[in-house]
Picture 1 (tube, rainbow, N blue to C red):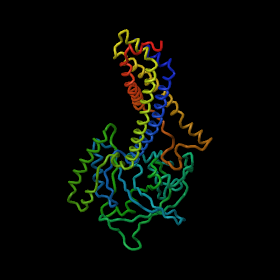
Picture 2: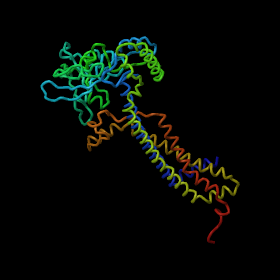
Picture 3: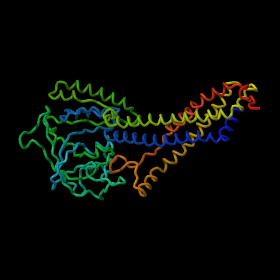
Picture 4: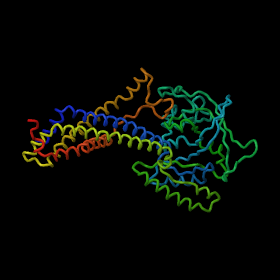
Length: 450
């Protein structure tokens, strides 16, 4: 009992102990805020990429695409693991707003809007047709016209607060989209002056996926028209990829492995067909593998931030070490008295370890509570700072994928931070504790300068 009582006395009656408490609390506060924000950004970016492609992608990077995709989709739809599939054409094109001399390079995606919305988050990304994605390519001002959906950052400019000037209804705009049609062998399907396919579309909606690269370059058109523009409509119809959504409860790797097995069987059974060579370029990937080029960069930044703040956390160890060393220097007579009445070395070490545990646990709880309160108000605080001083943590005109600062608290992260803070405090107290346990009563209790 005396070890606990003395630990509390040292904590609350020695002002220098407040330095250790403050150091632990400040360090924990910083780590909680930064790691919560960074983890929120990374998780949000992963979710957006997941929504963009669905759970699994069977496709090729070749602009030629692959044939017999309708047969394979029929096989997929019969699987007990798969909920929905969507054929997708990915290509490049030029867009020319009618009446303008500008020619803009774009990423072209051909989809069946209703079907694609069952697999991905395409429907949720729309502004005007969010509730009815099947009408995505039907302009509200004339449903009989052929519409297209434009990435929001290609169509609208964001203001400094991250808001887009969306109109109540899409305004009438004609867009000429041009692409080079390719044969199944990868050569131009046309020659001479007519080597480019061009079709006029009408702006019908915009799409906000939250992925800057997609929203700034993508134009979506009906699947069959993308086939015509890219030359994939004859003699055998081709597509670039099939996006797949698994049924609820199916693990990602389980579903991907099942699709890969079905694809191997399908490729083997179609090996004697004329365009079987195109099937060799098809790979089956989970959404994480398909989007790894984009996700890996964010994960590396998160890892780097974790390492940096881990090094910052080491300062807590040194501060606790200094504080304990000074306390032991001032309390050497107390230690001598304890040892003179028979207190063992292990009990002396236990006393100061209890003291370190109190410093670490109370300091970390203070830091966590302060961090949680700050995170709860971080967006209103940023808004106030912007209104008063024009300060933003991220310029919304540049960082188009960020609407608000992530502040969702992860209990596992908080628990990990608390454990690390307490461990750091104990680590800083080890050497001073052994020094205290090694003091001899005859030296600490001697009377000097009589």
